[in-house]
Image (cartoon, rainbow, N blue to C red; front, side, top):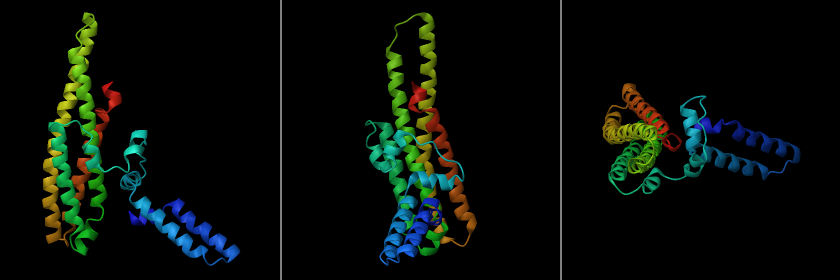
Length: 234
């Protein structure tokens, strides 16, 4: 991530512009100012979730929505506290507790393990964000389903369409519940895999297996968050 942030065109352009102005004016104070500005841009880019996902997915650029912009700087734990109190929120908070322990296990490991797993932390952050996205979509779908279930007025054709919509929503809610539970279990497994990597850091298969598990988890959560999004529910 640091390498990608350091080579980001807009960041490199800052260095070029600063060097050009210095060559023209010979104002010595421009050099440290340029370097400090460049370092800040690299630091901010490396911690930007949208930039992280773009780097991890190659050339694929994720669609940026207003909700994504508003929540990009908000931790998944804080977003989880906005969920209605209930079983879903409890499961998500439990999964996020394990997620933090997995991140801490990587960050407090030895230098070799941290170097081997440097690509795993952005994947973990992305998985935590997507887990909360799924939970938010699940709660909104449940709200719409309750409204449909309570509204029995209308003609036979209208009721049939309403029942079909209700059935689709209930299926998506069940899928979200299953994935949230599975995510908790998979994060527990990932924590054990981090320990195995730290013990056998010379074996690249260990880290590859961990990252493959994270990629699969992210793919499932992203696909589910898309089908249970608010626009689909309405």
